[in-house]
Image (cartoon, rainbow over all chains, first blue to last red; front, top):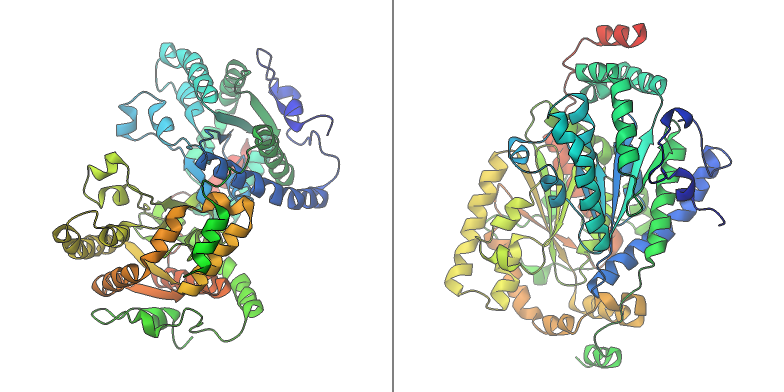
Length: 280
Length: 280
């Protein structure tokens, strides 16, 4: 493959996010429709599963690598659906899934990265975050939950923290699921049409939606200030679920391939072990 | 369905476990072979997924029910494979998977149920434990890691703790994956045949295997003393992977059906919400 998908979707460190110039209906790096995406995903699945098993196996031999997929996006952008999709390719026993909701009083009694640290994947694991520490410069900023002085220093704190983690073997894949405002309205309306989806809806969804321009601005700030060489942001157009799934799997695959985890050798004599088992 | 699978596999509270009388090759409650089991599993999958979504949805309306699948069994019995299989039917974002290994020094500084409590599923979640607090009356007993006085009081402690949790809405499904000793030898030998499986093998597997009769005795004690009305044990013959998968899914299904979780009603005016979205 000449170009990797991550080169197409990355927010250039130090550059602009330019969300207005990125069409949420677009399918960068992919030519074709839903059926072809599904075929390619089916081909990717065993490769991802094998890489994950190698990652886990390598950790038993002392390799410290682990992967963290961070999913951010407006309501209905498909964070939950992406978690479900990605995990379908992996062995869930080696995954650490966390959804970060409104912080509890205990969590608020700590630095904002405390609860995030507690949910990190360990060596050999793949972590998947549905929302993350970025909410502390997104919802928190939009709703003025802390002073500007506090949230504005968080970008640098995040960058320093993420860089230290990547130096220690954590591979961060930060994905912004980019949907359009009209698409969000359609998705909310579809939830209203089905009584078995009403539990997913709250009046709050409509008031949050009214803050769209403020969220847009906060997202652009986060994507621009925290897309670093150590941990860049990727913008995945997410109006098409099939493209979103294809792209996130592809990004994971590219990062796992770069780690290139290897099965560790056994620490025992194979022939002797076989003899002992057969001699019983 | 006249008879439920759980009635066939349950260790009668107050009764004997009689592992010697239970054939690990047997397939109680199932007539047929692998292909038929797969067909039935495919039919069960959407039913399980729907029940899990209802369980989660109900919790957003205040329902405290949650489910915990506890998997125990000798090495190679298929605990990890069962986790992978079961999760394939569910939305992993609503699952809490924990594998309990040798306790850390910090964990050993607490009561043995401390680390287990920390891993419990919350309302609406399905927890899956690969090993559990039962290791504290199994491996710990077999290896004399604590005095008999200590491990022997743990059965009653476990029963009291489990009963309190079930009163609070936790539904426990405790499964012993029952394999034969010859089957274990074959599985260990197969691991030796493949260099990409050597990382799963250790000399320790052979020394543990030599303790088979001691483990058998410890398992029988745990199954007999801790199969209670509130939280019975189920013995699943596990020489056939396809039966094991079918049976565990079936047990989960029966317990979820008994909970009968319902979607909560929305706490908003649907028509007003629709008007507001369309009026923008």
